[in-house]
Length: 420
Image (tube, rainbow, N blue to C red; front, side, top):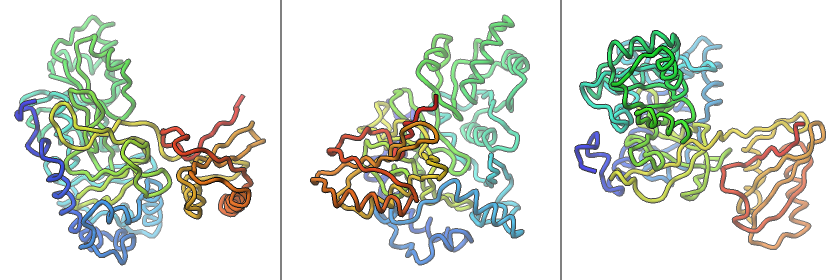
């Protein structure tokens, strides 16, 4: 792919150069969070920011999960303090021109940077160019999705029609009247719009590209759009950290955003897994207004080998592969992936583990499947059973497996019960 097809030269950098530049930004990122964010001054207490200069050093920092953020914000508000749980480095005013709310509620600040959520890159990769009119059907109400896409499109040099959600017939009429180059929003709503246009006998000849987010985008739906002359690509972003990764014309996984440090960790832990193994997506950004250091998205994915055929050189991930929060209720007690990790860490003989909950409702059985290259002994099994009961407050059994026996799907807890 010619250089002109990249948003900028960052996308074709040598991976070693990109890595060194990202790592060089880490100490200032950590220092800013410690000094300017009330929450991070506690979370990162005692951390020497100048020592955080590698992925190994980063992996030693604590992971911040969505439920942690929710709890921190709720506690802070109950005390009459910051709605953002002490995470933001500024108060209301010029540095924070917008404020949003996601379900929870979790409140997010919007900064004044030209492309605050870094959405111009995925929009460009989906085929939009300066001078295009974008029909933006992400919500502008409460959540930041509409604003995320609008600021990215404007930064790219596009004009934006703030369509928002709902009112399908009016969406069709606006598309017919304004003749946008493409659509941005959820794929399911765009399908509804195109079906309504067909029902009304309204042609939409200019709408030939789309960027989707917010929900799954299966190959069957991709092909449905292609049959109707629309090339639709997906992006992966969250309100907390902005753009994380985006699809390219190669349609081989998602390329990681240039300003993101992405890790894949074992669910329930902060421990990075080997490339190719499914785990939870953890993201670090250098946003000075709303620092996110090792923020766990709750989504499962895996690193793809090699480079994108388009010539982009950054890491690629497979895309969304499910949710990492596998908390399961067993005999009236919640069992968490973190507890499985606590059990395993006490026994170096164990390589990988999966807790399988089986049986029928009200008759739950719990078995810890363990991979090990060591010969299992009855004494070791009994010790693990005791630790399992100590940590989960529940009885369970142990089953030993050979290395590489468990599926590579990111599951730490598998609910295999019959619900008939």
